[in-house]
Length: 292
Image 1: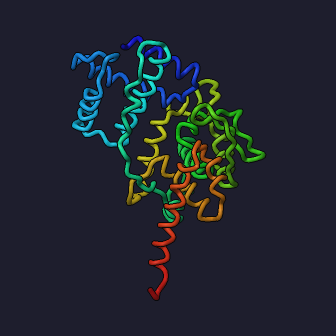
Image 2 (image 1 turned 45 degrees about the vertical axis):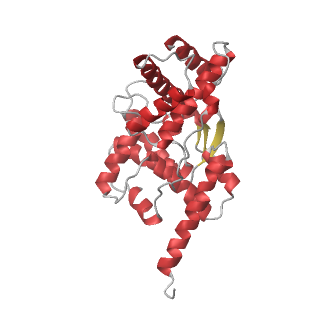
Image 3 (image 1 turned 30 degrees about the vertical axis):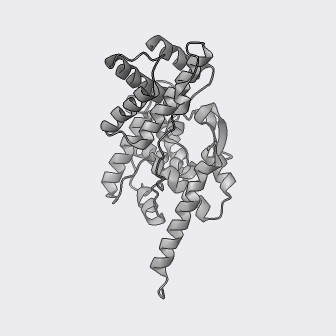
């Protein structure tokens, strides 16, 4: 089965142009499935519906959330589609398995006061602090995914037009824009970036050893920043993406525009922010109107 999994991973990389994060996720989920089948002596080509339910129960017993179980099913279903196309199986039994219904949760975002605190880097003096300030300003100004920010190259940034060419999910290219604050943060960072480099680097953001700054490193920067300014709730790079979407909708942006800026394939993914802004406005109304 591992041979087939590796063929499938090559296929979604070279033919389907899946993103690096999706490929890594699918590989993890498929290899976990393969290990389970090996332990339970189940033939992957002859697996029954009952055996599939036993596997899903196994995931549930390991405290996997519904969303994670759904990702497993999606990855395995896609793998079995590949097996069918290769004439390894006659029927994709995973097409008879529905993903668990996932409870919709509103994404976490910052209000304007919290955002101002997060972006207050007035004391930034070292090149590393100046880089961190640029990271935060760019994430809020553009609504980029953390993986997209990590992959920005110098040639992708047009400072004059305050725009960035981004390669998003599914290798889809789009243009995002940034404002004057982010431009100033970027120019300040460019003035000190050479001090962080040990060799030429095409990527904008640099890690401690002079290489490309990774997604996990950016997440660690957020953890450190949240602890330093004592924010009451958890923040991550995605928090600024949610904040960007919420604030721009609150200020009258068209939802189709927000969909394009965020790089969402489906409008329904973007529409959750309209619910978020409605709930926020309702709460603000109740807090601020004296006569209820």
